[in-house]
Image (cartoon, rainbow, N blue to C red; front, side):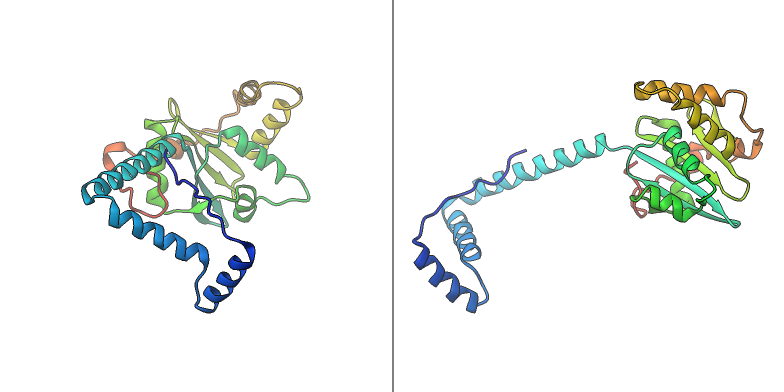
Length: 236
């Protein structure tokens, strides 16, 4: 994307000091005055038609840059149950089940506590969202798993953790089993990230909980109204 061009001007330091002092008393500065004069020079000398074309060109470049940034962004979402209360969060970065598992293992230690507050501490960029927005992210997870890399349900009352698999739906485990799987995944050092994830998933085989409610809770795509203007939701 194009950008601003810096101009270099020269003025003796004594003169600059005197001018700066006077303009400061007037509530302005040399830089501000020169910027205004430069813009006036531009608007008075460049034809209006050319100015409109330049403005459109800048706007088009800015829109393209925003679209490129959005295309590169990834999201994840959390539902947290604590003391019978559900909270919903969006994270504007991609997190997988192994990432969440590391959090669960850390805060499962005797000197720690699994709470919504500890989740917010571990994932500082979490944003509160509504249940409806969380459901939309779950839909997007099923439609475009590369965009929404993880949707999770963490029940600190029942000590269970579930992740939404685009191919198989909800998979739920005890937090203890998830913590153990994380431990075994990292028993060997120097592996590529994909290998750690594979070891983590292998350790969870056969540990899945039989929770039909998780399957029933996956929202139907046609039953939800996509509304990208609600809160901090991603653009659908």
